Length: 595
Image 1 (spheres, rainbow, N blue to C red):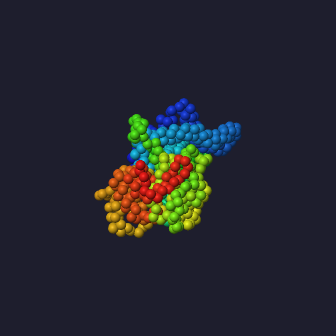
Image 2 (image 1 turned 120 degrees about the vertical axis):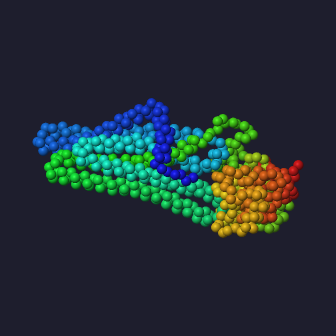
Image 3 (image 1 turned 45 degrees about the vertical axis):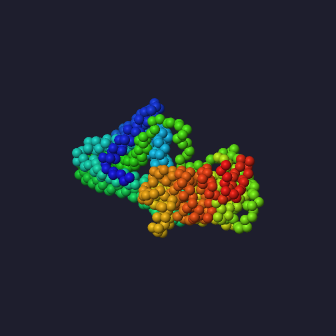
């Protein structure tokens, strides 16, 4: 969404952030004490900064008057103040860092806690990458907001106001100096909307790149899109991100340049003015040094104020996203109903890891299976597999040949390793030991993208890319698909009268499970693979629709492997491989017996 930034809306953001952040400061006494000590050090620092020029002026004055006894006292006091000035700033930051760090931790914890209470559909629509990006920026947002306001901007503004008073106190003819500083603040006030908008656009560009990278990894690994095309898409996103960050930094530098030019002009005018007054004996040398010191300190303080304010506004923009997350309505009551409870990770694979899983060992074949003389299209030779966290092998010394034209039904009780075997055959998992061959070439010697053009894998919870239905089913290459191809896919695999331009939300969150599966299958069929592996990929469809789609798949794909519990679909497969709990893999050529 394109936000409109105005000084009024930005001030409103800052107020929201202040109402949100500052209550966290007063949660415990230790933070309150740290804030009080910080404020005391700010006042002491301001007093030291405005007193040092006065002491230097008096040093020159008493030297000219030959009051040497007073010089020793001034030098000692000046040395003490210089020492305090050099240590007070780091001490102030160290003291307040405890506050900002504690507040950051509390806010991050509250944001994540609130995310757990949000409806799962709303959470999914937000996207995991977007949420993680916002949560990770809470730290910078809170620290920028608190440190620049309390530790940075407040001391600099206080010094500037005190020095304004002291300069005007030297003579009304110097009143144009505060006017120059006020002009700088006016210029900054009208530039903050551009700074805020550019900062927002920059983070939007970064979030889109991060989201596109996640989409791209899913596409190349699960949906077998063309890697070179994905890299071209990412290159465009990275270029947009690079340009956005350049504009943001350039705009900040331009604002700093503008204020530097304005203040330099007024400083030169003031310097020429006081030099003229000194030549005419209208002011003394000590007063000349005093005014020049005041100007130097005002210039330094003004530069810091505008710099702190820029960071402060940027922190407010970052923090506002966290506030928006916390404003998402949460579930008033968590209901643990066994019929609708879903405790699976939303963005992870549904494959489970269990050290106690039964093992698949060397398979036992019927004699009839050895009669095939053709070379297998896929072959597993002495394959072992285990997850990193497991001691035992889930697949143990497995040998399996799959020939072109095979229609294989894979069965076995839950947790036995069916999904693991599908991931291995599709090349998504690498065997711990052993080799997998495709057309007599080891998968270790093939690019995943090359093998992916031939073998497609669709799981039960396969994800779509963010965008429209049409953008998901069309070929990822920039070649235009013919209308007849699109119409064929629409009529064969998709629901009737579906709008191809319909937006599907993050990873298809706005679709039903059945719609999502049909779009994924249509996308795969558009590429016409030679091997298709379906791991419960039709489970959300009605029986008649699933049968119709499977018949269409058989006409396009020569070799199909399926994991399903649908008995009607089981009847359509000529070869049945059953993984038994006794660590054996049995193969039958007859149709599956439903009894």
